[in-house]
Image (cartoon, rainbow, N blue to C red; front, side):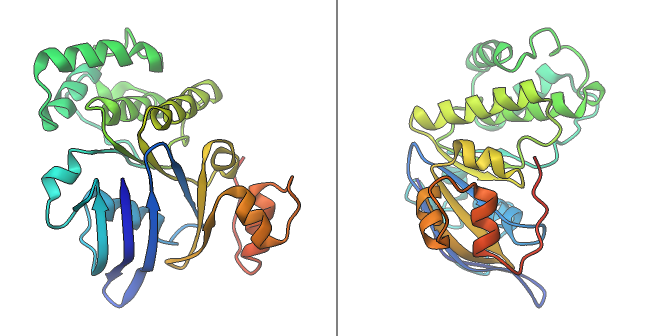
Length: 248
């Protein structure tokens, strides 16, 4: 579903992403982990078509995101790290607006919204203005909006930030179910236990370079760690000189 080959992105003279390559198949959850300024969000925004790469190829569903932006964006659900505040819109209006951008007709939008609101414990809140929501509820509405059009690829940038434990577990369950139904997921997170719990493959990123990638079992072998080693222990072994704060 997602193929990235030799992706490069520069900002002036700074190389933010340096020759990164990886692929995600349907039913896979690929977790991309690394410290701040390692290039994670730049990669996500390049896939989503928000940033234009300086080099390399990004394909979603077999189509190049630069050459066929509308076709590829229609297959993507994007959850940014910071939910956008839509002043003057209710949560329901925000969802209808998001669905309309993907070409969903009003009847289909209404049905999907009614289906998903209870899943995220948002039923009854949709008539309130978006700016009045807590950060956690804004994030949940953003997740719901990304799922409305039933995308094939879900791009998730720090999805758990701002969510209470119950909502965080709800989000993890939805991402896992999305993949189980045939979707592909790219998960960018600082929260290593989340990546360890739901990812089928993991990529370790540093200074714009992909240092290592594989299943947790494969990364344990590369690191020379035992089979019960946590992702935090594996990460520390494979990137010994990298200062990285692991969040619970």
